[in-house]
Image 1 (tube, rainbow, N blue to C red):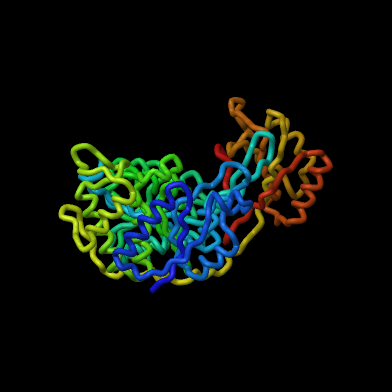
Image 2: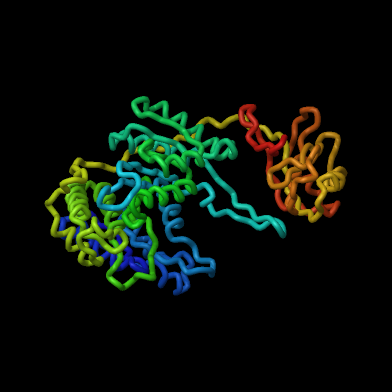
Length: 478
């Protein structure tokens, strides 16, 4: 018997959770439920995280969390509970299977069967943002080696366990050579440890286009956080419906299971919502806790129900569907089919699918790190980079010189184009003269001179090389 934490959420959440738990109980799931309240009521009671401290204690004690969709109120500084939960509990891997149910659920891709594995903790979802000038706001994209190694190794281990043949990586490392470049580099490194599994890399834009057009080209796809968030929803929708997809969020000690759709308040309380997404999340949970027999029984009953044409309004189609039902009636139909198998859709087996056992991340020997220069970011409301360069000339010394000015990543000095539009946010790069060693004291002196010249420096970024390889971006056009 496994004790799990359950949150019924907001909107349609309570309805689909009740339906899901009814099915789990009827199928003989060996679980005990400890319920907590999260979401809108908790937010509006004054907790900006949408969850009380004692609820965290329950989740951490039980380690398995089945969560219905919640509503995050607009404005007021409320934090996304999903993002917070994933980060606090170290749920680094988001697993989203997308398999078509042709011809019973409408799709242009009848043989689609892919799994998207999304990094869950970093990338732009670190949520580190600053307004720096009147015209420019920044968001920091953080990609780490540990984060990349964990999610990519998870993808290969998942493929090995599930007898998948190929793992594909999507990045945009032709543009983001440092961040996405690291993710791609780690992918190539880890792929060599799995010679029996085919591996490939696609640039995200053409990869996304190919996935939407010919998803049968792919098997397991691993991606950084933002790309994975967007494309997992796209994949679910082109499979048939976002409302049918479940999601597993896996960490080293805890795991959270959910539907990928939202709380849909417009249909709440009307006994219309499709519980399938949350049910799929619950099936993934059963596999995770070693109850593959119950998971298979429920999955086959659910497939048989879909096959029988007993559909909720969101997937109902004249000529294909036989009966339009509500939330409770759909759950009753699944229960009535327990012990049966689908006749046309592929049934699933009760093969045990245990949690993946991945090795702990081991920090590598530090590289030789050398300070190569500094970027001063300046708030200046002029328009001519030549004029700004003239203002910055007094900051130079015999050891440090201004080498480049960029605006929005494009080089505008020296040899900039008059046609380039510039904002009030300027990156001004200073580098040592004649290959001299640079020190951090020089950066302090540089900032002191800028202050004396009433130049508004908003931040600095130190430029480093690691083992002799430059680890910073150049200005486009350089």
